[in-house]
Length: 142
Image 1 (tube, rainbow, N blue to C red):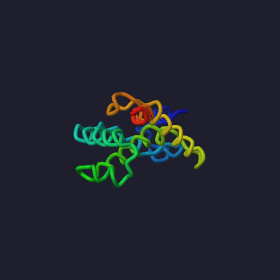
Image 2 (cartoon, rainbow, N blue to C red; image 1 turned 30 degrees about the vertical axis):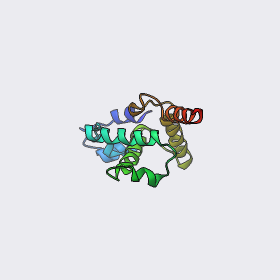
Image 3 (cartoon, rainbow, N blue to C red; image 1 turned 120 degrees about the vertical axis):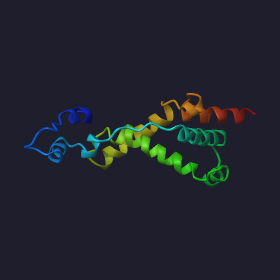
Image 4 (cartoon, one colour; image 1 turned 135 degrees about the vertical axis):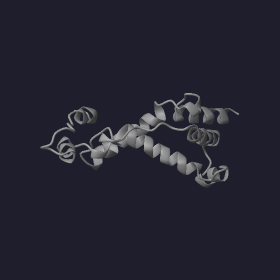
């Protein structure tokens, strides 16, 4: 049963079984009852696009060089935080992990999806893999 299906079984009106106990029995986080996904605001999206542009334009830059080419100096951190937020919302929270090996598999599968199948707006709807290897092929051809 998926987390969404288990969440639908919660009965907030029940007086004989608290929400905490219901969540524990259904193996879902109580905070998930109250969580509402938040969209990305325009400023954050602009920063993400700038980070993607720098990384895509210069994928071989070491990390510190990216920071030097970064007007705010914190955009890398924003990118990493957004990546982890996406990972948690799209993979970790959706799969009940029975242990470290399963969690590692879920994360590995999602990262593979993120890099090879998921189109990114900032990359003209390309995957990071396609954008990187297209750039690499163009550089080798030149």
